[in-house]
Image (cartoon, rainbow, N blue to C red; front, side, top):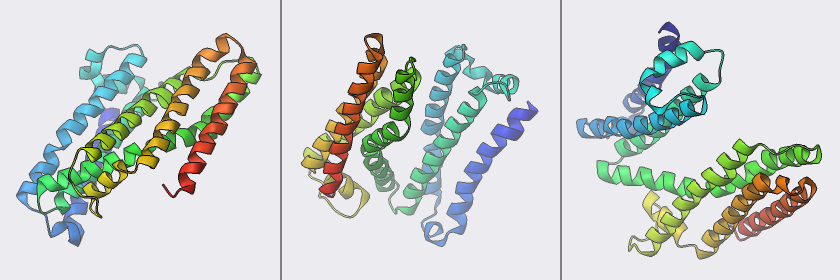
Length: 261
């Protein structure tokens, strides 16, 4: 267990310690530090760790383990360290969970009311994730499309896992958040403003922006479907269709930014 403790568990504990030190030594945060806020902050750690273990379990399944093997995670990491990508994937998953937890916990502590702080933290991340549809498109332009085009023109198929994970799963996840933000904003009486919740409401009420993002999401999804199933019919035709989709994506993104979001 020495490798797991030294290379995995200790860095995770240091990440938690980093956030705790930040709350103690940064004056603006320390002023609002109290027992209730700290309790709520560490209580929030539980759902983040549960989510991290859920995704770690999915990673185990991709490497031939079962979801129940999550109980043997330290042992599995110890055995596969340096031989498989699995340990790094698990490490990155838990690390990202601790980063997001620390950011939301910091927002909660900085607020006078822990509940309002929690809502502000959720609003901040919802606003960011709702716009991640654009990020999916950008990654598609820079990484996925050139790689797919090269493979199609050389007689191979695009990376199926990348297409499924990015242009379909993640794209649908961010789109679901965008739709939820839109519905909440339209049916809420909360005023648009400079606070995190008010900014989220303002985003959801921008009909033109939401429409453009949904169009971009649809094109992202279409790119994934064409990339997955098109090569079975014709690789050259698939490459042409993907190129047309990318042009439409660029046009949609340009129109969005031209209107200043």
